[in-house]
Length: 118
View (cartoon, helix red, strand yellow):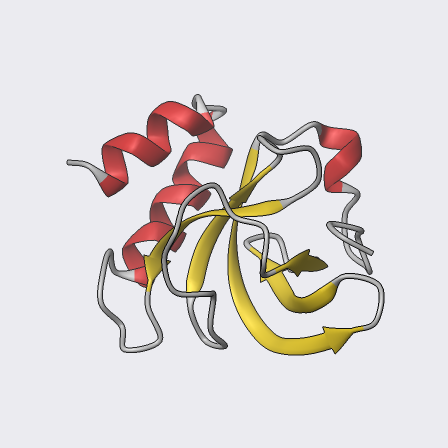
């Protein structure tokens, strides 16, 4: 069920290029190996494969905040924003900025790169 909505708004219908998600749990799946159950900034739950990423690095862990996108087809992990040890960009700052950009109708890609790479 890679990237399938399990509730909330239908993000597939909105065509969002990326989502900011927090990993709620990691589960074993007979179909997809290990999957992460994540909650996006809008409150929707998704399942995302943990073994398919664009680069090497440690796998996603419960409690981390990541950006997921559809560059490889379905939702996949693109970048770790806040680690389980709270290293990285402040989640509160990201949440406030995401809300502000959504409210203003800003370009989400431009917003992300200016927030993560000031």
